[in-house]
Image 1 (tube, rainbow, N blue to C red):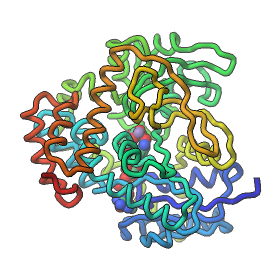
Image 2 (tube, rainbow, N blue to C red; image 1 turned 180 degrees about the horizontal axis):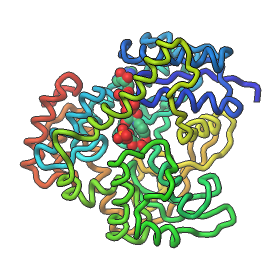
Image 3 (tube, protein in one colour; image 1 turned 90 degrees about the horizontal axis):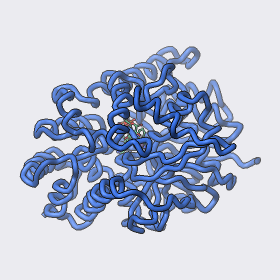
Image 4 (cartoon, rainbow, N blue to C red; image 1 turned 45 degrees about the horizontal axis):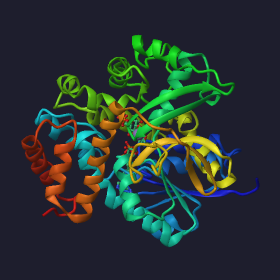
Length: 442
Ligand code: NAD
Ligand code: G6P
Ligand code: MN
């Protein structure tokens, strides 16, 4: 294992970049680096993190060639992996995605419902641009993408760049499995799961240890009382009070469908009225993050730069993001790691369309993911999933065709929106707010 890798992080100005960089530093023995670059299209934002990270890298890993740039050619030349986490429109637009729907009495959320659809129509162009840069300057490079909304981005990749080496992943199942493992006194590495669904829309059907003991009943009993709230905090992410509410709400998700263990994001589809009534349309999650994580990360960076040293720095290690290293290792060293990935169904869920982008366990090797068959799924889950996957497909069709009508239909089809009339009013507001980002719709 002498190979050393060259990595570019796209969305270098992301609040998650310092945590990922520190996680990469922690994992150098498993995944050695020769070059680490940051790429962003906002020089000022990325520069604040880049300057501080340059100090940290010089102190902790001077042998790694570290740089940051807004020049695509410099960023994407001679790279093995692009770790992508961009947010087209940044937090200002996340705020709009959350507040505009709430003003119509509808869920306002980053990836679910109309907010997710609006974000999707912004992300597609940015993601395709990244893929094209990658393929132009480093044709053998793989993109490990966790830019949201991952479901819509994955469908857009399937339609627009079907042969590109892009793998779409999400950290929610990883975080929730960590909680489940705490509930039963295990670690995530000791467990193997079966799962089916779409991104931010799925269910665990089995949680076993390597000896084959099934823990579903034991976890179900706990979740029926407490949701996924654990007695000790097991994550570095998903810890704010609003996230605690979300973990707790899994209790109500389980009540309506006790068969399987739910992904927390199902709350936006199964209890949208509760969510809307608890929301404050003048202060949403975007505001919480801007006043919380974003401020903390950028303040920490400024402090490092002022002091000229990262000793005693405040950047936390995003150790839970080490699944990104597991994925890069699976591709590079053909480890056949078992991971949940967002892939084209092609029979993995037997009674669901072949061309749906689904989230299922896969064995990952140097050709990419091989989905594991999850068999047939019950009608309740299948019906919900079909409605949602058609929303995601129609959003991508609306983008490709520039079709107002299709987008109106996609919104009307979303379980989060009560009527075609509300959908149309919302759409007109979203078009106005997104005019710098969306394609023209006719
Ligand atoms: P952020 O706004 O702090 O960072 C995003 C960065 O992307 C910004 O610096 C912005 O300038 C940059 N950017 C925007 N458009 C770009 C483009 N076209 N080219 C290059 N750079 C561009 O956002 P954040 O909260 O740190 O989140 C980053 C992304 O990661 C979001 O998409 C978020 O939803 C996603 N995320 C996904 C998961 C998952 O489970 N898949 C988990 C956490 C975060
Ligand atoms: C989870 C999801 C991500 C999402 C994030 C939002 O990790 O899997 O897809 O981006 O939550 O977290 P935030 O703290 O920004 O609200
Ligand atoms: Mn996610």
